[in-house]
Length: 307
Ligand SMILES: O=C(O)CCC(=O)C(=O)O
Image (cartoon, rainbow, N blue to C red; front, side):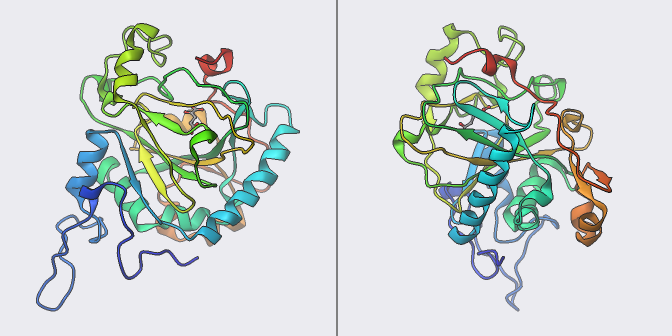
């Protein structure tokens, strides 16, 4: 695929995340952070993830690229539903399916997109690691999820006040109001979880805090977002007749340890064809044949009930 960003920056969902264009006399872009693509502004990316805990980029991929992804996810979803343990419940009429990178034709485009790389390197450092690829499907009839984090916050965040993992989300369809949009409470990645159930589910007494801050997101095909999975969020009720599949890419700072919950597998041939700079950013097994993934990361609180 040809990414849209070769010649000019794609518009950002956050007005402040566009870089001021500074160039040398010869027109070469000046960027003081060697690994960041000069079309993106490092302080704005840092401010968004450490501030709101979420940032988006509009039109990162062409719609045709996303339409192909949508077709591929539909096939993978059917296969996962037919396999015991292939799709994990995330509440009424919702599933999460972890997949293999080579199950989708756009994996390389995704992980080499200049915005994805720049965000990872800015926030997680130059040795960031991709640990997970999968997708969520809130189907018709899905209900409001309880407000939650996707995992427990560690000492790095609670004490050292540092983010050590990110979740990228890419919708496979245009999100409409009745499709149960994703909802997030900006800034809550820093909240104290001592009263949370399993360190992930805030008590209902705290819901007014999230409701007061809540932002619903309406991404279109081609848009991409990134968030801390610790920023309190939920899927809302899908009262339409359409599913809303969303691709999820999980990325860690070195040592964050979320690879223990996942099982990124690549066949030898696929792995060998990847550029070295992509291989350097994977925590994976290289296998002769892809094995069905036994999902290690279930969120029991979501399987037990809706809000
Ligand atoms: O509905 C969504 O987009 C997100 C769902 C979610 O947060 C989850 O299943 O953990």
